[in-house]
Image 1: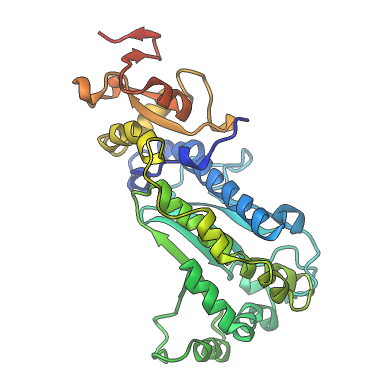
Image 2: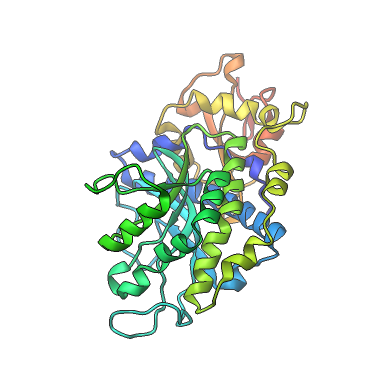
Length: 355
């Protein structure tokens, strides 16, 4: 598979896909062949920065990829559901190695309720840490595990939150909630048996390369919290202090600046053509073009299975009078789209120059 760089990922009007309801099959295929592959590229870059920052290979540390929707062949009707979001991120592997948590039925815990990853919806792209899945299966002590961890490391976690931009989602329906110290809010959660404490950072669409890069920085900075919870679930003691000693937030931010430097080869200039072209494509038409072209680049034949990120290209550019009609659109991968530029009027589906 070709190496797909982060700068090839464009999430301009993609969020509008989730508002489509009249063609669920097309919507599901678009998520499967376009949205999830883009989220996969973002996660791969996130894990690369974790390796550089902490020297940790996450998949050797009992993590696996979690994605949703999960288009498994054995599952029926997966292409007929009205999906409202797509998720791609990390979660614990499904093995009976989690001695630090207990199930109510005393069976070995094979799944633990913590995920860290990217959620894309009509609201934009979010980095989320969700610690509450499957909570009904676990003991009170296990459900309190994350809150006690936050309480014991409150000052450090607040600093990580501030640096990463990850905000806690506080239960606003709690009638006892008032403006009070963060530590006291966590204690209230414990006293009331409320375990749904999430962290999220959202950037609304359209998203630029700098926006996505900023979320990846947040992923790297927030990673010690996810990693520590997995270590605690394995029965380890005080893993948080060890990984905190490895983090250098300034290095993460400076090495991957949030703002692009102005130069002729900046991402903004490189993707200018495709971003301008895509900006005028009506919601839904983009996905119809992909479906017509079988979610493959009409030039080289590559698809998401080959690591390709797909774009919709105007055969006759708008700058030369090209129409915004489906007959004037074709599916190109990023490399072929940049190679074609707006100077070419070749209809790559037919191999001819348009009249």
